[in-house]
Amino acid sequence: MQTPLPRPHENSSPQRLSRAEQMTFGRVAVLAVSANLLAACGGDTDDLQVAVDRLNGGPASSRLRESVEAGGGVSFCRITPQPDRAERLQLTVVMRDGGWYQATLDPEQDEKLQTENVTTGENYAQRFGREHQAELRMTGRACTVSVTDGAVSLN
Image 1 (tube, helix red, strand yellow):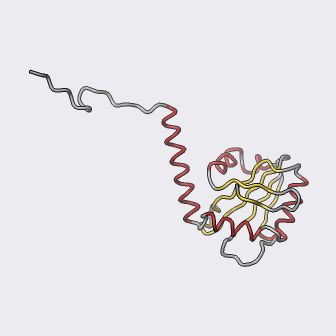
Image 2 (cartoon, one colour; image 1 turned 180 degrees about the vertical axis):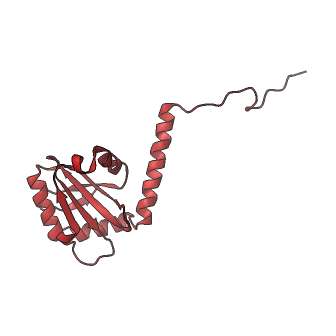
Image 3 (cartoon, helix red, strand yellow; image 1 turned 30 degrees about the horizontal axis):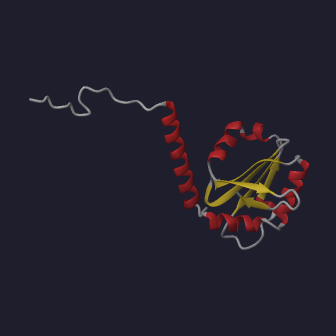
């Protein structure tokens, strides 16, 4: 007569996830939340491109070009949902010298983005904290900025 095998939950200790498995699950969760945020604010690829097109070629892109030139080039460029307005997006560009440029992008807006929708400053890390830049890197969409005309393109 054979002895029946114990069921998986009997006489066994619970399995703990390894650190690598925990980090993998964390990354998947962050990506899922980011995708949902972008979709919730109209941030699918078409809306992102429309918002970027509203910036490019207008006064705000000229100001971006000047900021990039003065700041020694781009260190970081990201488009994320705007924290206080779910229907809008925020472009954040950090220059090599620590200067920064932020613009509110609205896919619903019909005209070119004006400089009134732009904020600039110095020493991004001191103003917002290094953690903020790390958070931005995990959400939204990476972008690049042309040094010749200040045009933004999605990566």
